[in-house]
Amino acid sequence: MTRKSAASLQAAAWFARLSQTSLTTPELRGFSAWRRAPRNRAAYAAIESEWERTRGRFKVRPDALGFTVFDSRIDEPATFAKASIAGVDEQDAVDIARLLNRRSLASPRLERPASDGVR
Image (cartoon, rainbow, N blue to C red):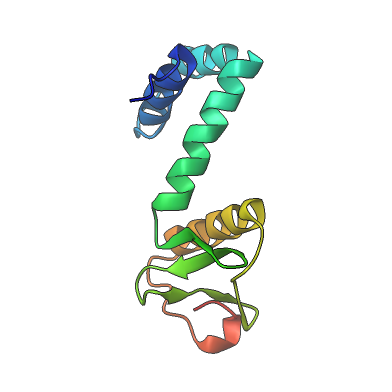
């Protein structure tokens, strides 16, 4: 069993706290100060990346050629600009999933016509 570092545990706590709807100015300042340390910044980025890979409508999965962004509603590779998002590098897949998840949160219906390029 791998033991988590203090920075990783603190990052998880900050991530949970920042996900709440009410946050105070001192809390935001505390987070900013904590994140200035390179180890903390890296730990927080890892937590964000893992959350983005596994949560939301669009998820990142490894494939034979790299990574695929899947639409969890239909369990098929997502498409963007009429292209399937498969076989891309991991960071590109995470960035695309982040973009599509934000877009789907902004418009919960996201059952748009095929002409907009997102399925």
